[in-house]
Length: 469
Image (cartoon, rainbow, N blue to C red; front, side):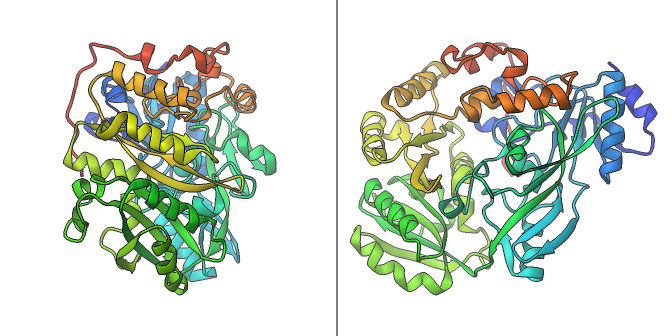
């Protein structure tokens, strides 16, 4: 294995070799997790390749196969689970240079993987009055390819569900990691071969995405006497098909009051908070819905005019806002399945109190309104964190473990045989983002083995403080 040989073979590529810059481009937001921080803090590539087009991507991949050099793809590096961390060193492939919109049509856009989501939405709004159906809370910095390869849902999922639901991605253009790389177009059911695969079985260079109508969105903040009342309002809002909405989240009493700095002057102590995005023509329908659950609107403003849009206080940005205030926190990623979701939320709330602070995001999963928990956790030890996860799962609330960096533990909770089969074809040498797909390294793995941070961690890994930007 020789990164230097790859670089010598491709002198026209824009290479980054300065160790400090390489380390910076080798990192994502894995440090949200104290477990991943311990495991991954020292991980870095040897060089970063910055291709300007697909032809350069192909050349880099072919050279890496020739010299058996691991290759880890990266967008903006906004993921939280170590998706873009180069566990085996080698080369990081920075795809942000592939940032063009190829074409737009009413209801559809085709774009390169490195385009920023905020730039893509600006173009589609201007050209066809459309916008992405949903986006992560990192919309202002994240790339389209990074979202599709590393994400799963977000702002807009209250209407359109998750990325894996049919129709939320229309096409993927993928380059294989072979001696002579092939360019494949995946459509229909084949899209799942590379969707949310962390770039372990092909490099996504282009995507074709459906668009929703572009509305003038309004950020709405409301207060409630307790978490369940706020949650029932959010569920009712998502279930109201006639109201056009893009977000419906809830944080327990004390969360917004401690961690949402821009709103501290209007938040009443002891109240739960709902965070919503509603299309402007439908605002007048909210007061009676709020009143039904004891709620009161305390803030409403256009999303686009906000210095910090409300979606940057939801999903994983809730965790980021909290970490800016208290570095002793981490989080969970939980499904509270309907129809007993409120019973489960109340049970966990009573059991853990302020140790696990409720944060819920309401979505449609295959048409059914459900809620995800991205609870804030006061971290003490890895053993206690594992116990909290176990208690949730035994109660019927599965955890998609954000303290593990593999596909199977972090999201799938199972081996995806389709993605594994595609990796055998598209990456026969196992050079793409190695270490992230348990199915490749350990085909006999099952969730019951709890491989994750129970066994992966290195107790001697150094602790290094991160600086929050």
